Amino acid sequence: MTETLRAADVLARRLYEAGCRHAFGMPGGEVLTLVDALTRAGITFHLAKHENCAGFIGEGVHHADGAPVILVATLGPGALNGINVVANAHQDRVPMLVLTGCIDAPEEQSYTHQVLDHRAVFTPITKATFRLDAEAADLIADKAVAIATEARNGPVHIDVPISVADAPARDRNVRRAPASAAVPSGEALAQAQSWLTAAERPLAVIGLDALQENASAAIRSFIEKHQVPFVTTYKAKGVIPEDHPLCLGGTGLSPLADKHLLPLVQEADLILSIGYDPIEMRPGWRNVWEVETQNVIDIAPEANTHYMHQAGLNFLTAIAPTLAALSEDTAPRETWANGRPAAVKAALAGAFPRDDAWGPAGVIAECSATLPPETLATADSGAHRILLSQMWECSEPRGLIQSSALCTMGCAVPMAIGRKLAQPDRPVVSFSGDAGFLMVAGELSTTAELGVAPIFVVFADASLALIELKQRQRQFANGGVDFAEHDFAAMGQAFGGNGVTVTNRAELRAALQDAMKANTFTVISAVIERGGYDGRI
Image (cartoon, rainbow, N blue to C red; front, top):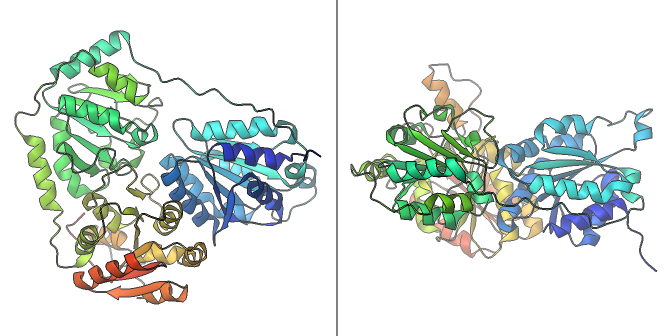
């Protein structure tokens, strides 16, 4: 006897086909059929302690397997608990399917308990929002997956009514045809080639879209042939290994780094904006180059509606074929005869030294020196992230993941959980400020339940360090930025892991070495003095 397909089954099967093998969330009565359908389709549902963290755990998995994130939440407060991570996915270009339970449409007319308009809530922070319908379940499922995974990636919301999830449905194997990779041609291409040929001081700014298009090899071939120094956004770190001689590192949020990099950008006679999404950048990068005096070529998947920068030539095309076309029939040549990029690289190394005896820079330097090169890292928002993003060297795309566009706190711990779940054989380390860690400490129980063993490093200075620094810079009185000291190591132990407090590099080195051999997670509380970021970021 043929099993009757439910609408929830049709949706779950399409998600499985998209590569999804994990779903995360907090179930309620309204999503029980949906969770059952995901399980039947071969997608494991994992219970988190908060929907926001569930989404970030899923993002950690996504950065390992490339599949869309599945976030499951029940109606009302469950759905609203996930707002932050959904907004983050929208700004950080993370493909995510947000599946929320809801009551049936007729009941909405005479029932109010926990009822609100989910679609109205999610519309401004998603690429699209749908209400599942049994007769069109296959169409809605395919549209949702296609929209979430098309450039630029992002979240799509599907409201799943209780009775619709259980209703019989058909799967007609409907699939949207993928867009073909476009290639520039004609006068615009000829102009770009002439600019490249004439450039004596070219510079590339590489962004997140390059990762989403898997364009690393094409970019490396291009910049090496034409000797183009480059910077990346923080999300794009590792698109080309950062020990490459042409790499000037990540940028976007550090005024100290910008002090050295922005003059070089303004000195360039050709800017190549390659998959560069300025949503990651601080205001200092607004219109940092001048199209009146500099040649600028922008290669992006979407039209410029942000006006953070302008370009003389805009190619809404795929990166790899565009660079190949641009490079064709153009000869390599020496660039930057004045040696300025090398001087800037040396100045940056001096600005972010690795020899501090302790403090936040000492913590990062010791972690970098002790942990093996294949270590995967996550970073929470705060002063430590700015410093870490300058000092942590990536040899591969997504070697360091973080919330770069929304800069949301509380992301590093759950992302590390997801990354370790997806790649258990790789060392995974999370870097959090103590305030961000306190936001999500309950997910240590999820870590233990999943049986994964990431390392959680906490910068413990009992202060919102970045905000406190800004407060002092504006000569305001101290207020609302300090809190009590807490025993983070004991928290790790209480949730079934290891915990250790360290106050110098030798203790940190020993703790890291023990953590790498442990079969459960480790919380390392690195106690640092307040004000340790002064002059460092």
